Length: 139
Ligand code: IDP
Ligand code: MG
Image (cartoon, rainbow, N blue to C red; front, top):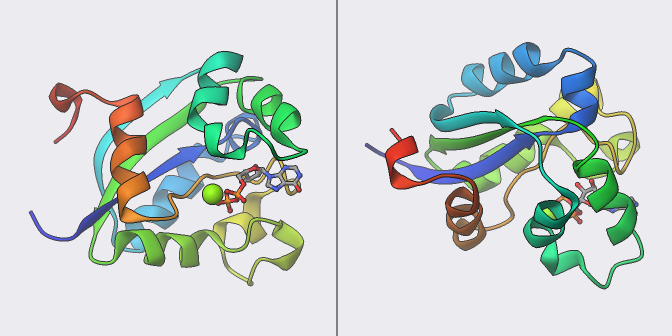
């Protein structure tokens, strides 16, 4: 097993728009291996725990309401340089600023409903993977 990990969620807007398949296809084509995956819905409280780092931000309420509004797909990914390469594949947080061909440019609806999550560091990738998955669920 080579490379490093990152964690992603396909967010409720992208699930609702039937874009799970196209997004996973782009992720696989970019060279990421799926190490764990589940389809589930977060409670408001769980969304708040996951995004606890943003607790004081003005959009925290909107974010946790949105992230618990429908099912998501949680995925652990492996690749060389996974965190940085995945951030490049998804594009900027605000889809209007995301580069052409990125997942957020193609699929995001707004800065809040922006199709996918991507970890911002190796440390957070491991913590986020552990938040969603037990060792028995990882391959
Ligand atoms: P990231 O997902 O690109 O790492 P963060 O700054 O970590 O962006 O923000 C986490 C999530 O919070 C974003 O993906 C988006 O869903 C939401 N968010 C960020 N900024 C705003 C905002 O200004 N308004 C509403 N939601 C936002
Ligand atoms: Mg972030």
